[in-house]
Image (tube, rainbow, N blue to C red; front, side, top):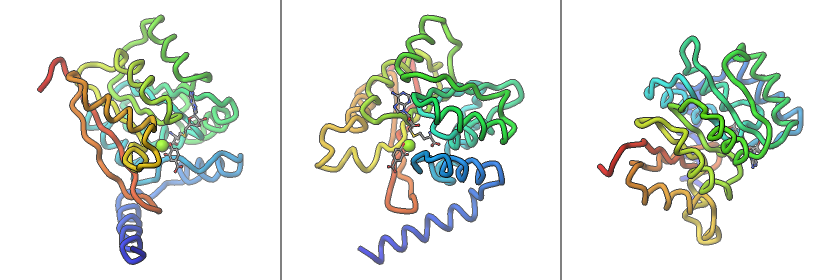
Length: 222
Ligand code: SAH
Ligand code: DHB
Ligand code: MG
């Protein structure tokens, strides 16, 4: 087991070094968040790069994120946006939002990314009420218990053909000790919907395996 873990960590290092080196803005965003006492639960560089590629593949002009933290994943994602593109990121904690705004400003993305502070579900309901324009990509990465609720609230905000992404949907969802986990319920709910076609893509991180649930919104069962 030790040897296997070592090998997976080696693969992870190789992928990161080769395809997802951080530039100064990303490295500083991570260091600044750490200095400000934020938990180190941002996506890894390779996960950030993967999110960015998915957003580009989707031709994203509008991206929504639930769970900003220090803005690290937002920077990766917003770099997929064309001129005039926009990202909205929802965050409960105003200190996290302040740190994220500074990081995003330093990355030169202040015009593209807007952070809205408050419980994500409240912000999503306000978006319904104000007839917010639809999004091409939605990335759910806030409190895991909230995932099933975010699924219901996010789907009406996603355009047909758009991508719904759920972070950290492995390994907790399959561990016995996490039988009631929000990510497990999320995966089951997503899999049962005929207006979504989905898969989990396992991802390596420095320690062990993570998972991203990728869903495309479709008009009817395919
Ligand atoms: N996407 C970030 C990591 C997000 S960590 C990145 O990869 O860089 C999860 C974030 O969700 C934390 O900042 C936490 O404060 C926030 N959060 C927790 N509960 C929330 C809620 N109810 N609504 C919105 N955000 C919430
Ligand atoms: C952890 C990682 C995440 O991406 C997240 O959103 C929450 C927690 C973690 O490693 O604990
Ligand atoms: Mg996450």
